[in-house]
Image (cartoon, rainbow, N blue to C red; front, side, top):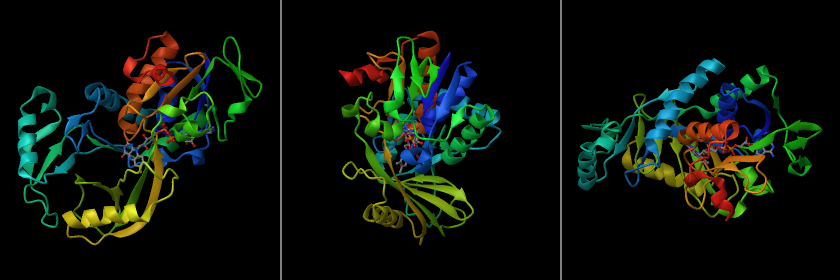
Length: 346
Ligand SMILES: Cc1cc2nc3c(=O)[nH]c(=O)nc-3n(C[C@H](O)[C@H](O)[C@H](O)COP(=O)(O)OP(=O)(O)OC[C@H]3O[C@@H](n4cnc5c(N)ncnc54)[C@H](O)[C@@H]3O)c2cc1C
């Protein structure tokens, strides 16, 4: 079987490698400038919603798929982008510490939260310390996408160009694009799909814009990921990511300097530091109305497949979602109802 894959962000890259593993032939068409979420993402993953201290939907399945997939993807692409690293969650008050301790005794949390409270360096104002999360880390998403692109070039199955939706012809048994027949199309077109893809269930999307800063001149020994209201991620060579903001109202992918400044103020309220801003970036997250991703095929055109709605957790969710999607395409195994894109057309 031969499929056309549109888009090569986190979703498209993961589908491309999984398809190769499953023996499915794909041709990828992607132009990175059409939507940039995967290029600006900090790439952090963790199985916990840190604000509410609840587990992410299907956290164990997602983590297992992630921990199997990215190391394998590194070896296939002969590249490095997967960085397991603990995340420290700053305790703001005593009830947060108590909640942490009571969760640590529950089996479902035992592998995720360390019971010991960690003392942070003196330049961080954390009299109650921080809790350490396990099975967390970050993927250098730019390096990941570039590595998969090189792999696709090596396989001679990539076109670095825009896909034109109006040139796609649907046939009884597949599709035809620019004179070539395929068994179907997999749309991994992110927020651009929401804007332009005529088959995409538009009204189900609730996009959010986000800012992320690259800063320098934090203390040399700040080599750990810290979550306070925002997060700080060390990149090395005197650079750190400071992220991220959530903005439902302004949906152009341009930095909002007021919001960026709020992150700096928030950082300075928990740490005696004087960061310098090196770069300001912004992107639009493909969030959905019910906060679940969307995968599967179009209800009336089964040759059209989608993987979208990865929201703010693309790195964590992409491996399991891509696995389910490939099983659907190759073996006609239904995708779980909660994430089935059919719910978005009703
Ligand atoms: C500020 C910010 C911080 C974030 N931080 C994190 C984080 O720390 N961890 C995390 O897991 N997630 C994070 N995210 C979320 C993450 O970025 C998304 O979940 C993820 O990038 C979605 O990936 P995607 O492949 O679905 O979409 P996209 O990244 O939008 O990729 C789609 C690709 O397809 C291309 N494309 C689309 N249409 C066409 C077409 N017609 N022709 C050719 N090419 C096309 C686009 O140009 C793009 O390259 C963050 C997002 C933002 C905005």
